Length: 211
Image (cartoon, rainbow, N blue to C red):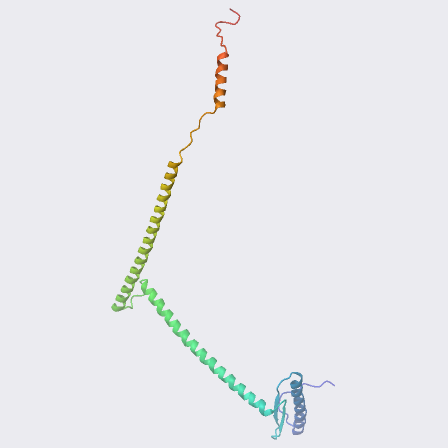
């Protein structure tokens, strides 16, 4: 016979309610014992019946478990309070940072010449002084960089002049060698001249065979 699902509501019949309480109490105590043994857990179980009768189970001591529980609850409360304080502190810092960013953005826009309608004369004077100081620093930095570049160019020019002078001295100390004709070349030319003198050239005038 299939057992129906028990509805989670108060049992109206007193006898049935007492029987169900006894059965489920014993099952609950058994499960608590098994959990403490199998999992090496510290378990404390306290049950009061409808008539106020106490039933309890503890793997070590109910009082020790309760004390441990209260200490843990206090520790959790302290940690939660510290976390809440930290969150509030971070929120305040985030709010202040947002305000600083908004202020800097407004100052930036004013430096760019924007949103000046709400500025007073004193604010405009201060803004003008800031711009003049910034321009002076930019010009000073530019002047320094140009001076450094000019000094470097002069150093490079000096090095090139020294190198050029060194090359000139080297050319003076080592003159170029003149190439002279060898004996073999002279003999060859002489033979060709003699051969050319031995060749006779005959000039013939008129038609062939007329002489």
